[in-house]
Length: 132
Length: 132
DNA sequence: GTTGCTGCAAACGTTTTGCAGATCG
DNA sequence: CGATCTGCAAAACGTTTGCAGCAAC
Image (cartoon, rainbow over all chains, first blue to last red; front, side, top):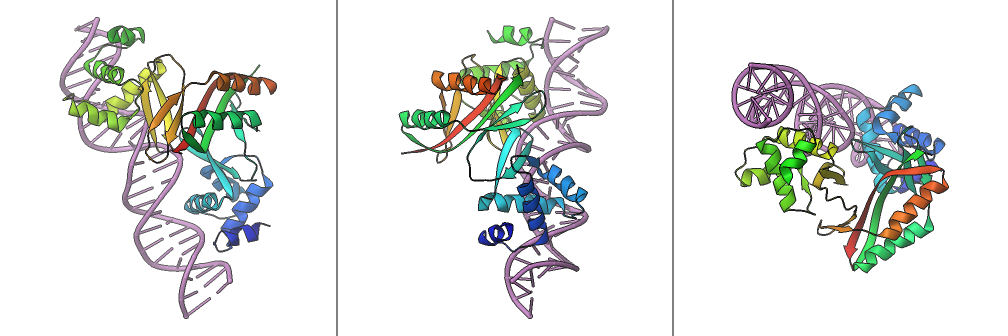
């Protein structure tokens, strides 16, 4: 139902937006940098400029269609937002990203911030790991 | 014991390095961007080029003398590494950074990665919070 | 037809680098 | 004195933006 999602975001349903959203939908759980997505689009014979990729990803992020992460400090990556919150571990050897969700961890975070008199708005968590 | 730390890192004890390390030592637990540090050095009448600040911070990070964090996605900040691990929460209204350590949280992370057959190498965690 | 979108190239802010001269040991 | 370091300016990097033409509705 990608067209509807774009429309609901108050955006025109254009070819670049459809193609990007379709690609991310077909690759749920995978993470792409703007540049990587640019190459993927080119490989699929979709001629989209890099600037458009950035613009569309930002719009999609605002609309809650994609999530943006910063696993490496110099480049952001994006993935489709499926609505199911999860955190990530990155295998430092292979670069592989593993998604996980841990209810206890989520609860603990709320507890920690409340102990300090705060309310949890958002969090960022990446575990860097290595195969045993 | 700042001179010794610099020497132990295999670096020459130069004025810029001493002045930067001294400043960070005098401001434990505070976080500075390279640019902010540059301004602080200028304010203290220490004429250090921005490129040198970056170079020295990178060398200090490699040597384990300072920690680098990415609270906002466009600018890294540095703080003295006191050897005591801690995580951070950022007040989204004031920008204030609060350090905390939670043993349970640390244990839980190890448990989570071990369940997946991994070993925890490092982690990155920032809680974005708001006063209640 | 009007509005909003796209591509291109140029601009941006942060960080890195090449190099000639200065400093450390 | 030799090795390393510094400052400067220029380059590099990922990302954003201005603008003229194009696509969507």
